[in-house]
Amino acid sequence: MAVLTDDLVTRVLAGAEPAERPLRRQMLNVLLAPAQPARMSYEEFLAWADEDTLAEWVKGEVIMTSPASLLHQSIGGFLAQLIGIYVEEHDLGALIVPPFQMKLASSGREPDLLFVASEHLHRLHDTYLAGPADLAVEIISPESVGRDRGEKFYEYEQAGIPEYWLLDPHTRRAEFYQLDPAGVYQLIAPDREGIYRSAIVPGFWLRISWLWQRPLPRVLDVLRELGVV
Image (tube, rainbow, N blue to C red; front, top):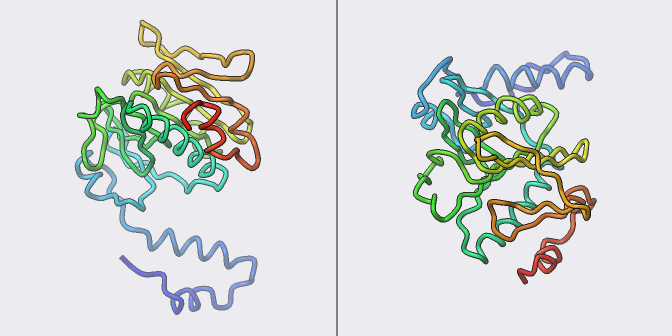
């Protein structure tokens, strides 16, 4: 793999107008990126990708994704701490953050949060979850809205993931889906106080307004409200 050295950057950017330099640098990054095979098996994908590779595997093809924004990461980190501590305190299973793959029938997805209940921990392997999580959370970004609301929604439904959260910090919209007895996602509305109660994480509830606060609330304060500490 070629390295984007200071000397190479200087030579390529030499003579470019200041306004053109960001575009030229972006072109360099694309040209020097590691080669991506056109098609591969899931095993080949796991061997090819590393922890810094932003990609998912769908029907033999590699789908590259964009880096997450600070807002996206802040909400993800808040939920990871909140749910993670709650799950640990009640010995309910495992809460996993990316990068970590979830292997479904025809795709390898990387949700923003995965919860695996105690009775399904045997599905966990070193680098991926073999089968559906019990809860998948996706934090929507402008470039992922089509995947999260379209392809992933139907993949997660068909895979039998019992609970799916779709959180959009840009529109401040939170959607919570639960599988009905027929295996179809049904939208579950929060109660009158704006609280959503999980069907999969026993006893866990989420006040929706917490997600949109700036700054986000202190995790310890929220855990006290949940009765954990």
